Image 1 (tube, rainbow, N blue to C red):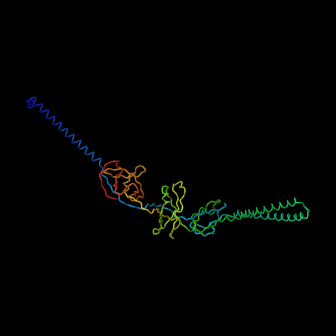
Image 2: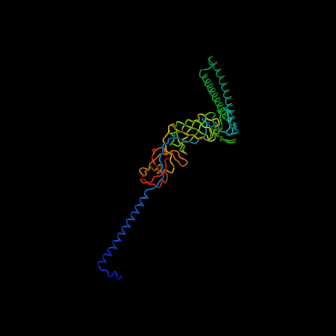
Image 3: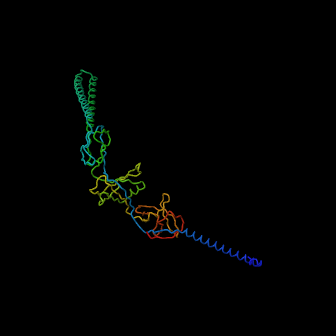
Length: 374
């Protein structure tokens, strides 16, 4: 302190200026170093290291597989034409029947009484007809001899005509009663297999109420349900292959026979019937079948990991790397499974896409590349 006091005023001023300069230089150097460190850190954070892959060439036929059930080409839902109580059932579920076999019967006693009543009416009308015919014959002879007038003859002619009409009416009623009596027995109209039974002995059934379902012998089909966005592809399909879950070594070709014009109100799918062109002899009704629809021409596709898909709302997208920057691009997808998905359009051979961490990226962000070709 004494030494500092001994310095001259000029020397003190120089000392102060020197210390102030040193502090200013140190402050500037520290600020530059801090700013440089901050800029370097920001630049590092903007460049994300991502895993990428290059799209390779691939072609595949467009295929869609649907599960279905083996059905008969023709199926009849059988019912009685009269009301009554079921008293006999000669078939079980799965029974094989031939045309003309008696399947089920209802109590015919009331119908028999109707037949008896109609038969009695026929006998009565026939007696009236005979009487009217005899009267008409006698009065024709009397008229020819001039004993009676034409008016009297016309009355007996009219009586005969009425009796004849009554006889025809009662005969028709008798025929109807006989038919009704015959309807009490339900017969198979074709050979086939009983696929469902909905009435039991003792049950009261109504006219037209289905009681049995008969699948005709002959053609077999597969019934599948197709969503509405695939209906046009089903119409244009060129090749159908049918495989059977219970027969792993058997397959058959198919052909679209029928497409329902309206969607099911619950599932919103359309029923499609596929005819089996060369059915294996081992197939049975109700078997599970897989129907694969495909087109002959191959379609350029790319197979990418599921982790590469960025879902933008309802639209699938992928991050495409261009000049070390990423761009979000919409794509169309196909089949998927086992961690991979098929891209049918939106990508070109040689393009590089991000395959992991896609939901942490943003449009136009710079990235550091990595990965292999697909």
